[in-house]
Length: 110
Image (cartoon, rainbow, N blue to C red; front, side, top):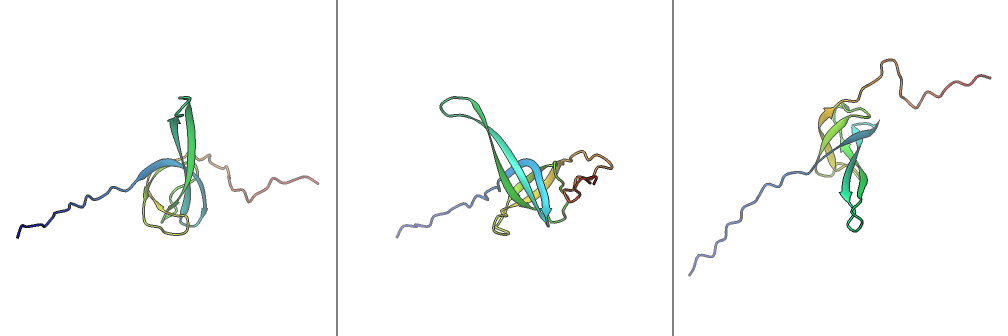
C-alpha cells in the first residue's frame, strides 16, 4: 500500500497594515483613521485619490487628531472595529493655549 500522507505547510499570514491620519478621537478607546490612496484611472490614466475611514482600537487613548498612525488588522472588536493602533509615526503639532474642542461656542454680545 503506497504512502499517501501529504504535508501541508501553514504559512503564517501577515496582518494587513495601513498608514493614515487620525480624524476623530471622540470615542473611548477608539480612533477613526482616514487612509488615502492614489491610483491611476483604468481608462483615462488620470491619478485619482480615494480615501476610506477605518475604526481602530486605541487602548490607552494615546493618539490625537492629526497624528499619522500605523494600524493593523485584528479580529472583530465591535460592529465596526476591525483594526488596532500599532504605532504613532508622527505627532500633530498642537498650538499652545488653543482649545480645539467643539463644546465651547463663541460668545455673542447681546
